[in-house]
Image 1 (tube, rainbow, N blue to C red):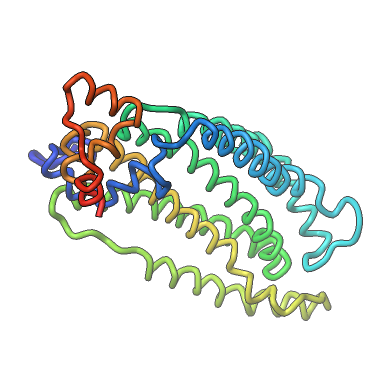
Image 2: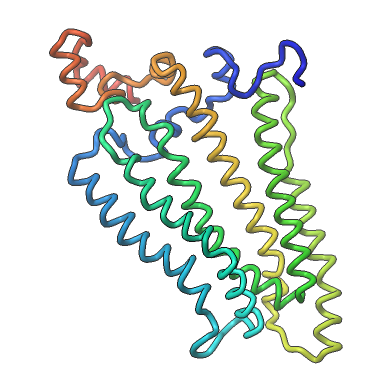
Length: 304
């Protein structure tokens, strides 16, 4: 149980929630030009061509098609045939998850670009898009990194990096959530990056002599850069963890408070009525007398 008076991560009032909402405008737009002001043609192009055709084809190829067939036909360069068999085995095991991520980020793009009246209605649409998108990119790197780890550090090294990578991923995510709670309660946050980098370096130092002896004793050839890239599997988990932690922070926790206190954050972030409302809905509110029309100069000053 939490101590009496300790604020939970979703239990803060508006004033205290400002300690967490440090990327409010990014939580509202995800770094894009105001999405509620996009034209219909732009929305259709972004979803239809960019997401379903461009990213749809590329995403399917690098996360599903290529890992499932690598090494079956033609020459294999840079990695061994044994590692291609490992990739195919993992791809077959992870195919349901890969398909889930693939289909989710495709169809989750529709709510992101669906017309809305208020900018605050955007906040919960980003995580369902970006989490599976980032996860699909991670899987593509994961297959390659696994092959490199297998070739450089043998099957033992691959499993060691995999277990350590998963443990670091969980540690980073849990620490991020705990840091948000600490920030709300005016407690010191704990930084893990140095410890994580030391662990990754330690894994590399530990596996290098083992791998070198194994390849020399068994007279196995290995490309020199495999040793340099050997910790890529662990590092990929670390990068993925920090990306997911960022998404949880901005597009879940910060989004929650912006959705809970929309007008308060509109004022706090200095967002004008023109930016907050869709063009059509803004005109409707002005026409009905619910809003006073902002001049172009006033709107420009507020957005500076």
